Image (cartoon, rainbow, N blue to C red; front, side):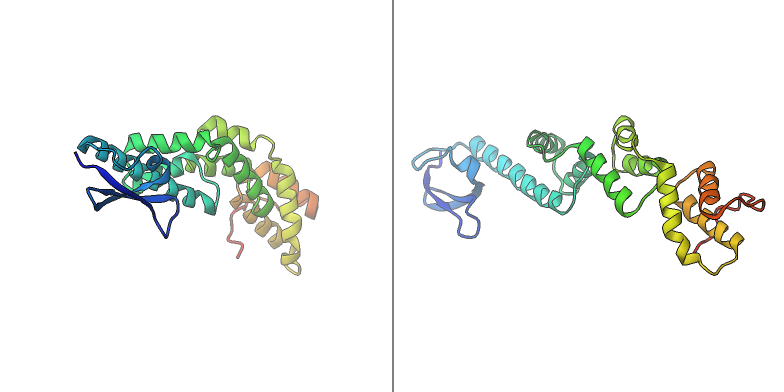
Length: 216
């Protein structure tokens, strides 16, 4: 069997080690696995294959950490990312399990962060938020829990009040139609839209359900 003749820390990545067998470079290995090796140790073909397989999983794990660094992700998004890397399902399960154990992947937290961000920067109705979370692969119970405190009426009213100055100078009925269209595209129900328009523009006998004209 080949014998380890040298273990050298890589210059460009101090968390990786070059493994030399019988005096020649054989393969690179993550430090966490190289710690269990020593000079003079013999490695069978099976042991070498196992080490390389573990190292492949470690590389995928590191790439996933980088993927998570840009923004929070759902478990389904991470699984899809690993699939694009051609990572086998057992290895994918191992990586996801490790991320969950390290509290780097948590669907409930992801859902709440998503809702908080949307509510702050681009408010939408409960219904649309739940639809977005389902598209991210979250289960119905997690999506429902994340949006349960979203107040559609308050959000719609705040959006209408913020939008109204942009419509100044337009006939009142046109203002109503454009605000209706705007709120409708954010997913708010007609009953809420109707109530909000009464609050910000007053009652109108001409409001006839023309909700979805293009506002731009």
